[in-house]
Length: 394
Image (cartoon, rainbow, N blue to C red):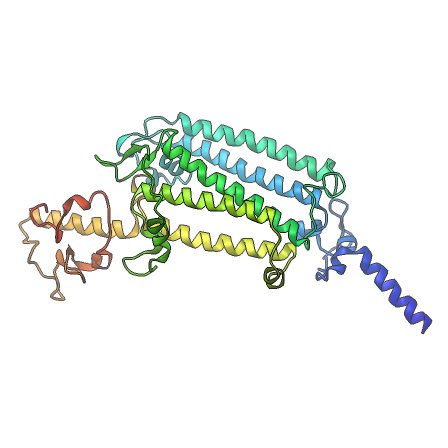
């Protein structure tokens, strides 16, 4: 019995020493048990070398270094790719035909472009790339410092920056800080659009231009009305936004709410139901974050595919519905010049070949593109009349 008790005490002491076992994490098996990375092997951490940051779960200082270095890599890629696109940019060709993925975003913010989305100055793009490269160097140095020279844990030396994953109050404080930073980011776009040069508006008179947004929409009925719309059919949820005033107004609302929410999370403690409902561990926070990023990714996918206000076609290429509608319009113009009566011509199914009626009675383009009958675009709206497409204008 005494041997059994001593053996059990040995197991308890071992568990206390290994934080990974104390927190009941699984233990991976190394293909080479003698491999040691950064002084942290499988025996002391409970994780194999390829488990990455899992070895740093309770080492807040080292985990900070890993995150700062990761941020440096991201910023370095942005700067290097930015300069690569500037070096290969051909002003005579649209951005979307050159496979550019960063310059369209800078152009949308109003940098280096003029009327019609024409690029008139690439120097702002060059400056953006250089600033990102310099920033990545600073972040890289910080990441190396905290990974190699800095304290392993922050709780003793810098209590404000230290944390324990199960400390619910500290976690909500960190959440609040993140929300405030996100809110400030949203307000930066508002300031850029309203005071510092404006942004590119594809709906501007004359075919798109840089425009300072002086009358952003702040009506909660309009802004939150997008959230109440159906995501199906012509409603389109928030993807249906079709003017810059609503986009900037939405950023005013979301930026303000995030800042207020951040202050609230910093100054309060989580309610009992929240303490019971959530799993309070580093891995759980990671899963929550990945889930949120997934949702935002799907929303961004729909925005870039269907919305030509937030993603102007001059830079990103035509949206899916826009490409279909413009193709139908091209065929209509071609065949009308060849003598076709586009108003009455029928296709093989008996429906209008060029023009037909929408479910609401409007005149729309016929054929396959009729499923995009509710498309709105700056080149198409001038062709409309009180009852859909105007035959006289066509």
